[in-house]
Length: 394
Image 1 (cartoon, helix red, strand yellow):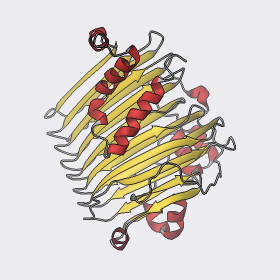
Image 2: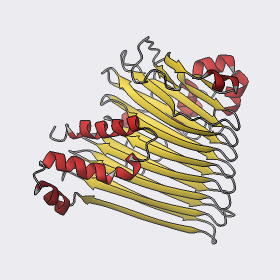
Image 3: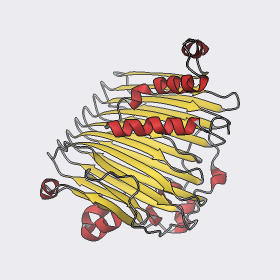
Image 4: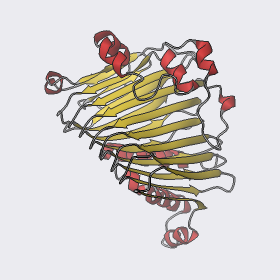
């Protein structure tokens, strides 16, 4: 455990063009809220819902349990599997990576632990739901760890929400490991409330010939900084990172999406789409890094931001750091306004301006939307887009 003075001596994580020091994310009081209510997880799906400190839904087939799959509240896992949890936590994101990550490691008191042994294949989507109970005014400090064993396969849908209206902060760190030959689709829908200011840090280690595809939807209503990283450590490791984000009112969302090509013949692609409304701010920082020795690797990124208000601010900042010659790499970035020709075409056919905007936005985000692992998740993303658009004139 890192003491508080040591934590405060660490630097804050860097989010270029995002000023967040006044958010006081390095000052947390971990809440201890409990509940018996299940909020977002449908009955009979494989998965778990953790709300505050409470497990409010848990379902895993007898076959998966017999094959050694572990799916439980982080606190329960620390009691039932202490050696395994201790070995894995902090193995992907260092306990002293930065001040906010170190603080999370020192203070977390809830979360989710998933362990999938080698050769286990899920036919259904695994649902992970994490809910911040904003009731007492104290903060949400949670941790998730997902281990996917060699040649295992799983599609994960993870959601995060705020329940309640108290002004609070949230710190969530998500670590994942895809072992040799594993195949993982990890989709996220982040929807913290307007009164929740948050730090979200996600990172995966991808080993030999494993693939991890991120599908990340950022529909938070408050001020949020988000880090999403893939370490391609093994030969032939692959990660496609797809991100969509939508900001409204006066909120700020800042993202740093990073892929590190460390192994030979690794593939790392970043694809980001953002829409900005009202006086909000959305910043995409993309970093592709190919280190010396990662021969035959490929790093590509594309970030596009669509502004639907003249009062909004958007940035798309690509960065490529290449230390090897025998590679391919490229990037593209743009920040622009809605295509007036598209709007005119739709409205000339009797479609209202509001509906036309919805169609343009859905089309703009369509490539990521289509890759959500379930029809329900796709519908949730569409509903989040429509909910955000209702605040366009606020």
